[in-house]
Structures are given as structure tokens and as C-alpha cells.
Length: 462
Image (cartoon, rainbow, N blue to C red; front, side, top):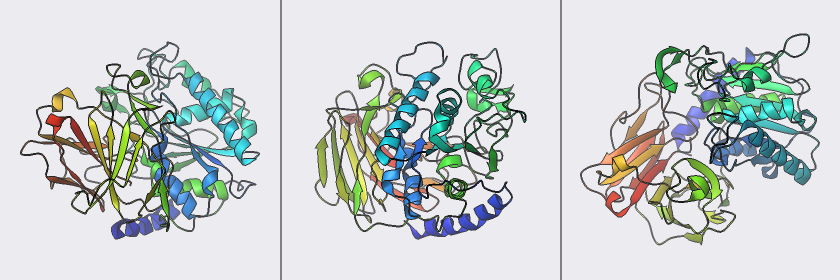
């Protein structure tokens, strides 16, 4: 990793330790010193968002085969949970998928219980599985990062059937008082919630982030907290950092083990092997069937990998090439842990998608890649380059962000961290280098021409 990121991790260690000391004492550690952990991503996301969290667990001795991140085939929630909607999943379907994955992990590892860690909508599936799916017999600890446990809004008249409505049947059922103390969590499992103090876009009293600026959401900053859980507050973190930041990792590690992690840094490996899934957009990845995300294999696509220089130029021919099969996997690929790479996806109905990534310090099987299309509004540009941060949002003035030398890039509003992409429409000439930087992580790529149906992403690890 860049040195500046390592220094930042050291500062996080000290700060997070003082925060957690103020929390309730951790419950007894899991009987298994390394229980299997099943990570559950959020709405529209992929297993790939857990890559740095998995690296941190591995860097603290957790066996790789006991860290499992799931990929919900259709990761977006229905608008109305009770009504069929193409390419979307209901809460019941989500719970069934999680239940099957837990059974598979328990069978493969021989473990008696697992730990569940969910981000955002992933926490809904965990709560539903434990409350209504018989999951308590299989789970020791449940950790929910940024889950909207009391809704993104709470209004019986606004999309009443949404699973994100705190006044709707799904969440009111989960939050019904339990036991003599009126807990909102299902007994028999150790529960933790992790939330921001006031920087989570989905725990805001005003409806600006749901398209209703000036309208009360009837939800407070404390919305993700649950009665009966160990409720941890990490000041300043955004919605995704409640799960994917180093602070969130430390809170989770301590909750599971009863001790502090030995490091928050990511320990490099000598031999790095990468793999993951190539997916697409729309219903069954068919052109013309929508631009919403899915996690289905994009069979028939081609993936090429190129080593790149500090200026984003290719340093030679492709070092890996594969036609994607029915399983969607693009690897394995033996990588150099000190080399940056360009991943190129070509598939019918999609733009040629160029994804530039920083060096990978460790192996991973969840380097998931998605083919994209050029938006109609961007076709006037010579090139379209997007800086994207999947594991967090961009906060102004919290973060130091530049794209093509502009700080901050356009499209990032000040205040609550609420967007994770910054788009550059290159209007002068394609083919030149474009550099994105975020708090010490630097990625350089080439502005491939939009006229030839190319689109470019600079994807941040951290």
C-alpha cells in the first residue's frame, strides 16, 4: 500500500481504540477462535466490496477459507416488497439465499456456528433470517453496519410496502418488542450495530437523499441502532464506511474475538492470485433490458488484463486473457503485488469497459468486475472517465480528492458524504492520461475514446 495509507491506518488504530472503550464491554468471544464469517453486501452491490475487510481479517490470522462473501444474483430490493418486479429480490428471496449460503458454509467448514456481517440492506436479510428463518441455531454473532433498522424514512403513506420504510410491515415486524426488556433484536445471538454520528446519508432527518429535500423522514441519526444490541458510533464515517473502513473492521474483530486486532494494516503477500466474477446489467444481462446492476455471470464476455505504468500506460501485451464461462469467473491470475493493472471487458451490447486498479497487496477471489454502457448524456464527450470508491463515499471537506488535477472534482456536494463516483467528461482530446487521487491512493488511466464505445473507471481500493 502507499505509505500515506499505512500512516493513516496507524492513526485510525489509536482513535478507534478510544471510541470502542466507551462502548459496552464486548460479549464473550466466539467458542471457535476462527469461526466462519459470512459477509452480506448491500442494495445493488457485490461480494467485491468486502475485499479490504477480508484482507484485514487475513492479516490478523483468519484462515482464508473461513471468510465467505456472498453475491445475491439480483441485489436490488423491490420497490414494493409484496409485488413481483423483474430483476429484483424480495425480502423472502433474500433471506432464502442467505440461509442456503449459511448451510453451504457450515457444511464445507464443519463449523457449528457462523458469524454474519452485513452492510446496509444485507443487515435486513440477516435480521429476517434470524427472526423468521430459523437462523439463531446457526449464528453466534450478527454485525450490522449502516443498516437502516428503523427505515430510510418512516411514513405509512410513502411507498408503504418498501422494505426500507420504517413504518412498513417488514421493519415494524422485525422491530416488534421481544422479551421482558422489549428488545428489537432476536434473542440467542450476540448483536452489534455500527453507525455514524451524523454522516450516513440513509440516517438523516431530512429527505434530501431520497429526493424529498425539506420533508422530514421521521428517522434520526440513531436510526441504525437497535435495543438489545451493542450499538457502536464511529464519528465521521459514511454509510459504507460503517462496514468497510478500518474502524469498522476493528469494532467487528473485537466484538467477535473479545480482543483488539494486532494490526489494521493489510499485510502484503509474496504470491498474489486474483479471481472474481464478471457481471453485467439488466434482466439476465440482455441488451435493452435495463441498466440496473445484477450479479449474474456475463458468459461470453472477454476479459483481458494489462500491467500499467505510473502514468496509466500499458507496459506490454496482455498478461492474462479469458473468455467468460457459465460460472462468470475471469481468473485465476497470478499478479504482481506491486503492479497496477487495467482490466478490460468486451461483450456484445456493452461498451468496452476499462477498469484501472491500484496494486493488489493480497490474493482475492472477489475481484468482481462489471461491464458498463455509456450513458446517452455522455456521448458528447471525447472520453468518459469515472473515479469510483465502492467501499465508501466522497466527503467534502473530509477527504482529499482530485480527478484530472481538479480538487474537488465536479459532482461531489459538500456536507454529508453521499456520492461514491466523480465523473470527468474529457472534452479536449481522448488518449491522454487521467489521474485520480483519494486520501493517498493514486490511480492513473487512459482516456479511451467514447466515439469508439469505450468507457473508463478508476476504481479505488480504500
